[in-house]
Length: 526
Image 1 (cartoon, rainbow, N blue to C red):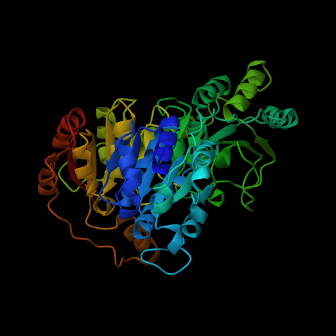
Image 2 (tube, rainbow, N blue to C red):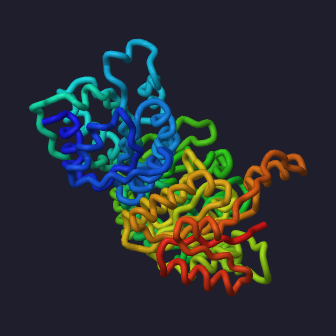
Image 3 (cartoon, one colour):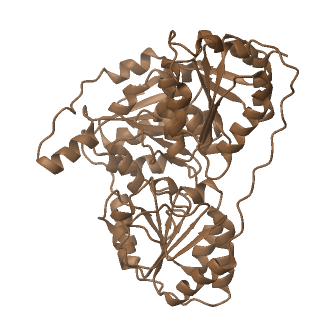
C-alpha cells in the first residue's frame, strides 16, 4: 500500500475517529488516504484550534486526540495547542507534513527544524524518514502519549515518504500499561502519619481525575471525613455538594482553602501536578506532607514530602481506605465547618440589577441551568479564576480548565471537541480576549453540526492582566480592547446570539441556549 495509507490504517487500529487539522500541499497523499478511511478529517480555520480540539478530546476521553498540520507556519501554529496538552497532561498525537527528504539538508521554502521546535513540548517526537518505521512509530506515539502521565507526541511525515510504497502492515493497538502498586514501606509510613494526625486535609489534583480514581477518593473521604481542596484541574473528583469539599485552591495564599491547609496537621496531595500551582503559595512548609502520584515529586524547595507513594493513585487510596476502616485513625470531624459555610455563601451570590454584571454572580445561574454531567470548557483569563473557585463541580471531567500551560483561545475549539466527545450539553466560557483568538472555529462547528453554548464575558479588556497591573501599580496599560457587535457576529455564522440586559434575562438566555443548538450568550461584565 501507499505509506500514507499505512499511516491512516494505523490510526484506525488505534481507534481514532477524528483528525483535526488544516490541509497543506505536503499533506496531499495523507489527506486522500484519510478520505478513504473511517477516520473523519475535520478541516479547521487555524492550526492552533486543531491542537486545542485534540487537547480537549484527550482530556475528556483519555484517548489521544490527533491534530494535523503542514510544514513551517502550519507546524508553528500548531505548537501552542501541543504545548498546552503537554503541560496539562492531556494525551495528544500531532502529525506535521514536511517537504521531501532531498531538500531538507539545505535552506528551502518553509522548511525549519520542526523536530527541534517540538522537542520541549512533547514526550517523544520523530521524523518518519522511512516507510519501514511508520507502523512502529504510530504505535509508539500513541503508547507514549497515553501512558501515565500522558502528554503530547509528534511525528513529521516528509511528502516523498508519504507517497512511497510499502508492504508493511499496521500494528495492533496495545493495552495501556498499568501503574504499579504502592510499596508496602511507603504505605506504612503514610499510615503512621495518618495515625498521628487529627486534622488531615487532601489536596486533589488532575491525576485523580485523569486516572479515574474519583470513586476510590470518595470512599476514602467517607472513611475519614477529611476535607478536600481541589486544584483547578482536579475539580469534580469529589462533588462540591459534599460537605467535605472546600472547593478549589486559590491562585495565591489567601482564601478559605489556603487557611484550611494552614490549619491542618497533615497534607496528602493526590495526583498533584506542580505545573498547576506553585506550592510556595499554599504549602506552609512545616506540616507533614504525603505525596501520592504516578511519578516522584518534582524537586522543589517549597515542596518536600515526608513520604512519597509512587503508584497508582486509586489503588493507593484503596489501601488507605481499608486501613482507616479497620479503626486505626481518630480524626476531628468539624474543624473546617465554618470555612465550608463561608465558601458556600460566596458561591451562591446571584446577579442583581442591570449590566455590567460580574462573572462570579453569573456562575450560580449557569450552574443551576447545567446538569451535573454537562461539561464546561473554560478559556483562560480573569473569568477562569472565578470559574475555578466559584463554579461548583459535581462529577470528574465536567469542568475543563487549562492550568498547566494556561493558553488563551482554547474554549471555542475546545467546546467543539467536547461536543463531539460527550453526549452531555457543553458550555464554552470565554472572555472577549480569548474568544477573538479562535472565534473563526465557530464556522467549523456549524459545518459539523455541533451544538454547544459559547458564554462570552465582555469587558473590552485583557482583564486579568489589567487587574494584576492595578494591584501592583494602581493603574493599567496596554490592556484595553475594542470589540465587534457580538450578536451580529453570531448571526453572521448562522447561530443564535443573546445579550441579556437583566438578571432574569440571563437565566432565560442560558436556559434557551443550553437546551438549543449552537449559540452565543454575551454578558457584559465589570
